[in-house]
Image 1: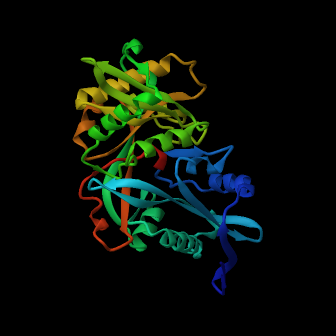
Image 2 (image 1 turned 45 degrees about the vertical axis):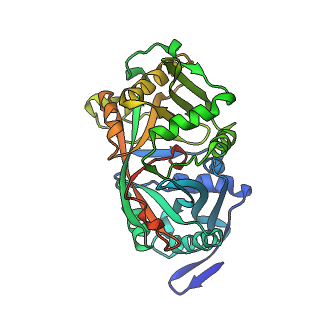
Image 3 (image 1 turned 90 degrees about the vertical axis):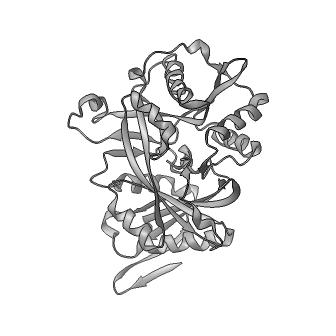
Length: 350
């Protein structure tokens, strides 16, 4: 698709290719999320690594004079909504070079993404927008999305989490996948956008993260049964984060101006809120057994802000990055009820 006009630069929108990698990394470095957002991201060496967890994805770029000036992406994934499996389109990675903003580039890229999405016939679409990113908030609302849920990403410094006995934690083999799946599903039985619709999708996610930082699946027992489980996903092969804020933040001053080495808990299954707190303590104990990285080691846990189970994590000091889940009913057949229930925030979407 080529676009031009008296008020628009001449550019074309096309599907991105692996040959665009370096140009995309350069464009991403230009696009600070928002002045009010305290984080910056580095996705080198592979811009496309973020998309690897998804069964289907497409990235589109806007190109002018052989330079990339815009980008956007979508992924198709199976999720549970109201306990029923549906196909969901996740929209992400919208960027426009600073010199080309407010000139129709984002709309043109968004139109290309929507056209491809319609061909896949998903039931719902959704996106996540960080607090303070005013331009993106306006863009998704202007294109019909509704703000549904307030969410948060908790960042715990591993060394600040109380010591637990790492001997309680054991690696979980493939033969225990059914038990792990049931436990994760049980812990999030009231959640929409749950990304594991069956054991096969759980196995598929683990396979896709192989080579992209997935460290393993771990669990602990109580009363002769699996009481909790978690996957440790080292996110550094996909993206690194730096806190741009330089002013002291009291107990959170450890993050100011620092590079963060993120490890997500994914998936995360537990019985009772005490089990959730135990998962955080045991994950930190397990990570302390590894050589410390050059950056600050951080355990990352996303959540729906209204989820009462996660209030138990208030006992651990954390930096909290807030964002909004936006949703879109793509079929007009009742899937627009997304947002009435708690949502599961998939770390792959962050």
